[in-house]
Length: 206
Image 1 (cartoon, rainbow, N blue to C red):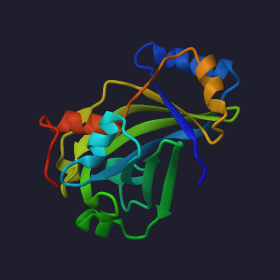
Image 2: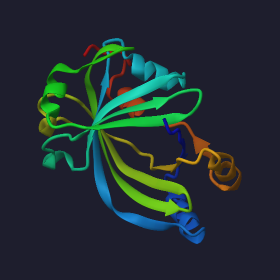
Image 3: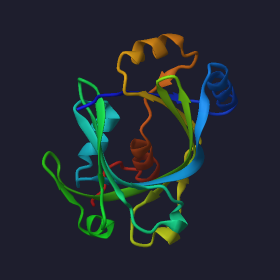
């Protein structure tokens, strides 16, 4: 399976302009129109996936459904994704599905974590750039909602940060970008932030 590296940078405030300028001045180009990304994240009743992600443990995974529409335009989620972080690297398994309603209603059975059900919905506006072998995305207007059947009536928590991600399927690029990028890398999980924004005790039942 192909591993990739992925690093995140908090570019809130004036750093957003500086980061975009660095990408363009370094030879980067915008490769896609901005679009809204909407994902539903799954976890078990003990929130084990949250705990492992929050602690930075490996191996760990995130389980989600994803579509590229705003909340009020959502029809069917067409992508089922499992994002895995291991000691060797990171990779993503993607399946195209036809009926997300069943998964949302009954959850999924994961071989490591048991029954996992939808917990939170996360949406944001993503911008896309390419710099040599690097894929660079900028996520802003990040919103977190508790998942329930009445999503249209659910209030949301808004993330104050703007997050850039630098990715490549070429693992050998990792040391080069770390040495040459003038911005500080950080750990940032939208799923963990959603849990911490929405559930004060950090432990819920699903």
